[in-house]
Image 1 (spheres, one colour):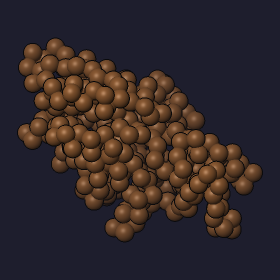
Image 2 (cartoon, rainbow, N blue to C red; image 1 turned 135 degrees about the horizontal axis):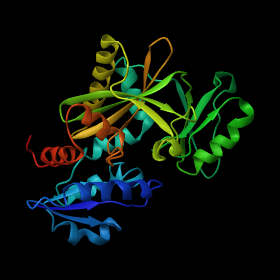
Image 3 (tube, rainbow, N blue to C red; image 1 turned 90 degrees about the horizontal axis):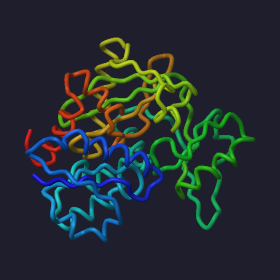
Image 4 (cartoon, rainbow, N blue to C red; image 1 turned 180 degrees about the vertical axis):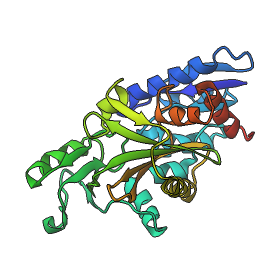
Length: 302
């Protein structure tokens, strides 16, 4: 089987994507049943190259790699690929849209206001409705790019300006005190919950990708009933958005054990130290096993 690993891309998460692509490549390069080739470049320019492969393993993160554009391109040219289809990818990347779906299906999510920037101008929500602290973040970006925790109105403008570097749509989201949880989904399997304890108090880019900056509990030390409720909510979001193959669903849990859906990542970090492989390891799947599972799902095998 000839597999192309599409990595790099043009998003703000380009460097993270390189790490994912190289890790996938190294995991199964010694498998004599598979030929693996790394691909980086403008997708429209390497179309003929892509058609040479039996499968494209999407090792992209953020931007066009995760918002449905590349998925639609591959669909249009009948090229098999890993991960969710264009519609699910687009819905998941649009945090506001996925939060609306969660609310409609009785899954808690932090309250939020959305700002649309047009030609550098935008209409601010009624300031009396904005509660502090809040989280200001781009609507369509991952890895906490452009995200700020705003403690009072004096910090709001700078946070909006930062987020505007990544998106014309910005969320002002209620801040939920407590801890961050993430739930991996692999096919029909709900993986063990990971509880995240970053050194900064915020699971930001540095804490995500710098060794020793975050502690993890996997599986999370939660009551069994609560564990099942969170896993059920994660799988519900996965299916409601129409996702497939694998994903990671992020929650925030308050001190009173209410859990709030934050976002779903259709192409989460996929290095051997990333969160999805960490939870897969808890059920006995090595990193190589995980990569092969994703390939099998994408080719219609289980």
